[in-house]
Image (cartoon, rainbow, N blue to C red; front, side, top):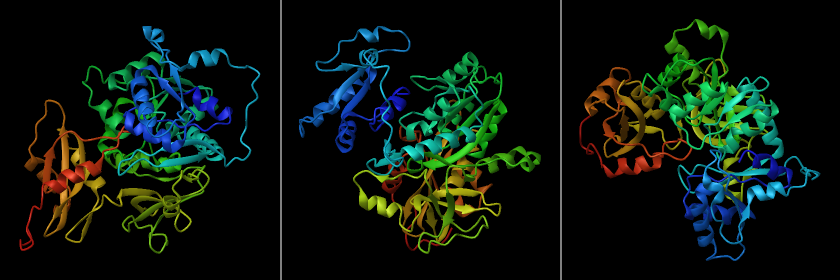
Length: 479
């Protein structure tokens, strides 16, 4: 995958990294939508690819050529696997390559370099088009965001199919870095690789950070040196940031979407914040921050009037982006593209506030905000409090429909192994730290459904909350 991030654009083609956790039906849908000519497949995923081509063959005879990657990094017998008839072998193609090949540079810097499909947390994935210019600028921006000096050692925990690995494949090459890749990401593997390869940088969603801090003490050992870790994909609870830094990680919080090439903002640290308490520092680090140097503009606006909200840390608006590191548009979906750029800005769909110092803070997805009895409840804020409970491993909050209140907060909680807590304890814990109307009225203990990029699938949880029915009836008096 890393090699193809260079080889495909250099050949004049467009890179389309598919999610390794998709099933055959979804892969066939994306192959058809992207009109891919070649599909490169790791030997572990061959069955899924063959299933996708079989589905595709029912509606078209113009199938993509399958290229099998048989090589296994661990030196197993995988390279001896039999190949399906008509399949090309990746290593054979590399061996036959022409060293004098002339790179096919883009005719226009706005030409597409890659097609990325969104996580599909709310619907079928959309095809996001990246340009050569945008990828170039965001790659340089990520070097600065991660404070990468020359020859960094980067541990891959972010999938390269997700926003082209947040543009880091190109960024690491800029600095002459070393890439440490893993077939599966485990907390034990992260620590092992850090010690073995003297890792200087890594990145991951808060899910990965949470996995690290909840390891047994004998594995969760202090690091041999400072490791810069960029997190994003979901707002990290302050408690997670605090515990990561106790281990020796330096956490940088970035925020963005597939449509912004991954990282679009950075919570730049101010020297004067060093004098604050650790809890206060962790809360500041959880902000989404300011636009990075490659982005033209970032703002929080009223989505109806398009006016900027006051920088009072209270007035909510929609977070919007503008610049070269924003997508060209959605492939074959003009309507969705026009809606996304209505008013001349890219509308993220995320709600946030702007602080007096100009830093933005995400409050919720517009579809996730809970309105209970006329009060707005930020699920992110409530999740952060639940997360700080010593027995809680993961938490997600959605609205439960209610005949009297409109909806009430419903928390889905996964407890740490060996820990116990009751729903009443979780509710009281929140009431001791928040206004009572913000505390969950319902707590469900369960595993949280996730996308392949570590985001909680709240649309699944909303269906479960809806199935619970109303807590109160229309004539119930206020509690």
